[in-house]
Image (cartoon, rainbow, N blue to C red; front, side, top):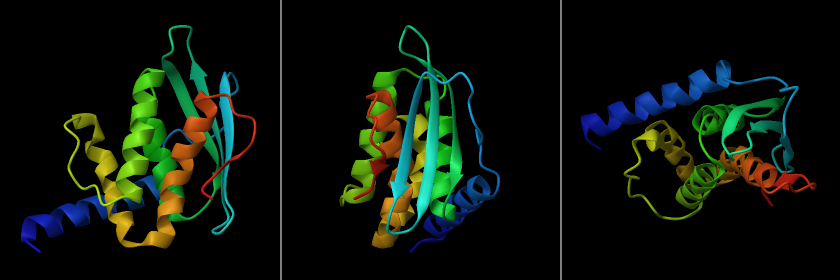
Length: 155
């Protein structure tokens, strides 16, 4: 592995640690228009996702509550940062991108520069048991946007 690849892995590891220790958008969003619960029964990760979507289909605000491992919390934090301020269609495309990247051998980098920070999650592929931790928030996002009433799960 080259020195620059090692540096990038270290940077991504630091980003994950920062988001797990200092999650962004953590807490209840009292005026949410969309919500979803998420549970990872194998690991015990639990979260509740809150979204406020305007009448044009743009996510004005997002937040989450819950508990889980560092990967689960960091992924939820990165997800809320990413989807706040974008349209539902773009949020759904991020859901597809992240879940595909983490559950397949797909390694090409998205041309969307706003995906850059989400690449920090790519390292989770090396730990198959942790993939469900990293995708839980994204499944909750998908459930919330589709107004599903059953909890999102990674099973």
